Amino acid sequence: MNIFPVLLQLRTKESREIFSSIYFKASGLPIPESYLHHPNNRVFGVYKKQELIGGYILGNNSNFRTIALFAQEEKHDMLYEQLESKGVFTEICCFWIKKEVRTQTHFNFFIWLTMAYALRRYGTPYVLFGTCSRSLAQLYSSTSRVKFLSEDVIKRKSTFIFWSKQRYAVSGISEIVFHKLKRVLKIAKKPKALINI
Image (cartoon, rainbow, N blue to C red):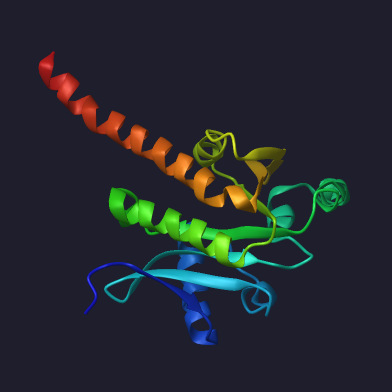
């Protein structure tokens, strides 16, 4: 049995529906069947000892789930026009990491870095992604490679949309990972400071 995490592209209906079920429990957001099984979308899962611990979807549709989820409907046409003026986009969607794994730095970073790999291999020249987490939005904003596109409020939650050039996937995600590492180390040092008081 492989003790190291592995990245797999989920090609079967069963594996994708397992992914969808776990993602729904983690986020509260259902993945439409038409999106989950769309032939242009690639679903990736990260496994540790045969357990799914994280994953994401790289969407290559003309209709972006990111815009549908994170922008008011009256802004959709304007956002599509802005994106079309730049080029062809791949969206990162349905990104999740198992709660227990988020505190395990090496597994957490592995999942982020697999995304950089997948984008370099399968992504188009531009990348689109969004979040309803303010802390994640701050994390994305921590790198100069990521550009802000839109902020909104959906169902009383702040939402954020970003874009970047695909060629910066590795360096941009590396900056995010480095920022996360600094934050983790800072948190880890706090108890020691309390002990010295």
